[in-house]
Length: 332
Image (cartoon, rainbow, N blue to C red; front, side, top):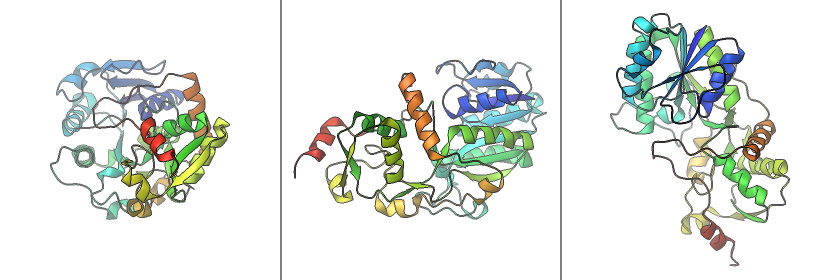
């Protein structure tokens, strides 16, 4: 079938395009053309999806039957896709899988997040990530109806990840020595491998699945300490953890999630990782062994240059600045 990936050259979108090609689809990707070519075998369509005519012009009569949308960041992008993909060129769309975020929920973080149909999403006009994702869900869902699935993704990891949260930990731990870590290593974490999510999104579009799905790993799959131990194992490092309390870290100016990626303050971590994924499991979202995800990410990092952070300016470079690390490791 003709499958359009909105995105398709970066991280999750690249894995979606790869999965769709492996399943025998005629695949096109639609991007701005600034992050490289799509996987071999996919046709590359270019344009700024915030422009009202860009998608229609790029398709130029090529009518997709399935759509996986990994790149929608604005209401304009959602409106333009809705107009084109339910108009003449999109009249044959049978399934549309949209990658949203847990940030679409009004009460997350800190959560917890229960079943999808019982959790309120943002309804404000704020031009921010969560409200934009929630609004895009409504815009597309209103016109696509039961052909529309919204996957509210959590933390995504795996090869080709440009965000470099897990990647920073792998790089830092590989260097060895004394490594600053929060003393709350029992903090739970749930992740989804981009390859698992990508393959499932393609299948969801094929099956014409609909509704909301919390698309992340199962609650309790690991802890921050367990993940860091895996990083040490797969890199063969001699790294020694230096656990520091939340009070010490915050007093020194350490920014949770940014300077120490994946670490959240206690008041958020207690419930922030508690997300009901019952429907995701029922609909077949897989969860491969975490060691495989970590090892494959490390192998990819060693063989490739790190890609730049996605454009948009709303992300900070992850990782503990060296001078702050030295300050924290100094004798007390």
